[in-house]
Length: 368
Image (cartoon, rainbow, N blue to C red; front, top):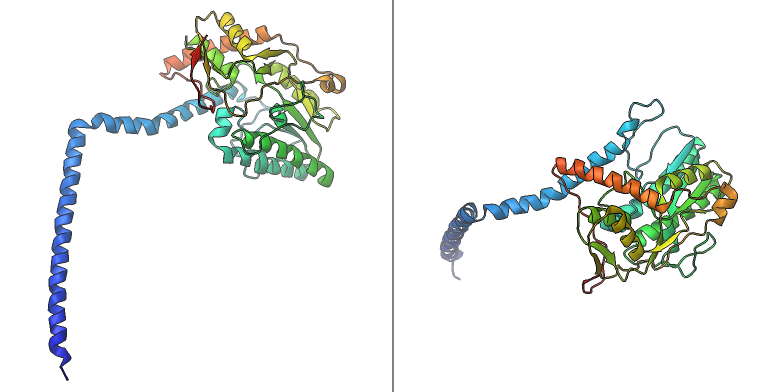
């Protein structure tokens, strides 16, 4: 029988050699790695400083833009700060809110396609969890809640003009669904709370609205066209420009919301201007009012972009005594004046806003 002692000693010697070899190889690899990194760093320092700065700017630029947006939002309400009937609370409606109120205007949600498509999950949470939280607040304190719903609940409508009895034509899995379906389920939640918990609800289906203090680069058609016309850039029309919209001035909307809140109408009510224009007509009107020489540029059609949009406001007229009173051109001139002032302010602060693009299908660009 062979003794195990010499065999173990032999294996141990072999293992030692292997370990030394492996350690040697590891050391060589480490040196090579360090040297490679050193060479790369020297190369970056000597030739790539601009690339590094460019990468940093890529990361910082969106943050800088968000800070500017936050500053602008604060300026939108700063004239109310200090008023005895005004208090500003910074709160995310996705989290519960505990305050004492009599009326709740639940307007929380991004509303322009580029903004709500940017973070569809957050958009859904705001319109679902946020609405549940606001309804829970209304139930706890016995408040009346008004939901700012939208004409988007009608989707790409097959009925024209759209009245409140129309159920809509919505793509539940398209890029706009996070907003469209979010608002549709928010309406469902309101009426569930009304039927089961006795919460008083009001639902306003808001059509395209514009006016001073709107975000200059939020991606909606009014702000895009005015900004592009003022900056001498092409006015970008998605698709053929035959899509129609109906635009109301912001003060008309506010009057409609207040009238609805203080009414006895619990079913949905359209709030919009029934004066219908094609997108191309609207672009040409803004060019004229601005006095711009900008060309009109046609881009690929955005997916699920509604082809027709016009409110039937007979219900609002009959039950609220409400209808829009500000003429379109008068409202646009006020918005254009505001945008001019904003551009001056932004230029003095070294920040030039750019319109956000819509989600597009593939296609070629043509000019008019």
